[in-house]
Length: 464
Image (tube, rainbow, N blue to C red):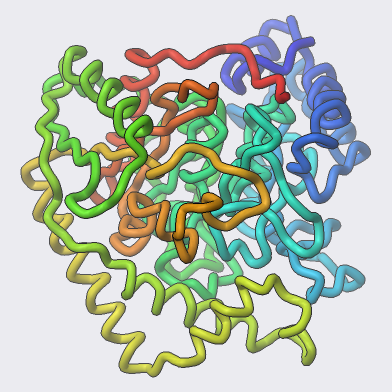
């Protein structure tokens, strides 16, 4: 069978008996065998576990008793989530794989409880610290549209896997854009929901910046997966109450007539002209379709300095728990972040948190006038793999080319990346939709309208 089907199409075929979960899982495993030598999206694949899960799902579907709306769908998870029976090494050579791995994170537990088939774990930069995906443990992950290019990060393995047909779904983490950046670069859909919407445990050292997010090839699939992941878990004290309704229904909402602000630069960001042209064209199509679009900026300055304080102090706190000698083994860029984080005081951290709160208040007021904010997802097109910044750009770090993502980790708002078009070189460009806190349903519905006005190719990237 083909691996081009969406998760929604797969479960529809399961219900009629046209396709079985075993067939879908075998197709995904074949795709991994064929494509992952090129992409390096997986750090662990477990065919035995996947086949056992698929067989159990096949029985449930045959008996007319699936245990969830995504029962039997082949899925991967980023190697940041604890997974019973599999090591969680987070791209690091400093974590001992030979220890008991006896607990599931909330994300992993919800996937199992709802019958999804776990294929394996996807790659991440060490501790998910940057916007591209390479690490000392598994090397460089590559973009399935062009393996010379980066898939982005830090959930780059998840995005590459979904884009290449190596499983229909994946779950990533996003502390500064790490679901949305690779979704944009790989031509898939990636949602960072409202903070607390998806329970996390153990608590991230990056604190209130950190989210988990569903990744898929369609907005409807992301909504279905969010319905699974948004269920409560007592281990996260910041988890929100259960959603009032099903996201798979909310995604169908008619958003024509709502007010959208389009900010191509946020008032201060430098954006590649081709990226800006592609996103502007998609926004014009949204306006023609009935979304009432006004080009305007939200009115805040670059919060990069405050973000750097929050990000680097979190990294330093985490790395300080690593075994002696880890300084010489971690990614050199991560080591610099570690060292920088140690230079900040408690007063610096509190001041950065105060700026984060002020930014949230400003965006709250902005959304009394505009239902959503639309921006490019990333300021550049996918660039050469193995580099933190585009070679020759003069940039100093990954936040230089991701000005549209990290501000909305600070505000804890839902933000989604959906494909907007392709560059002349055949590389994907994403459009970002940001909504008020707790408006995950609205963000999904507007993203669905983008799909309607900018249909995405149904064929998967073949690589080069």
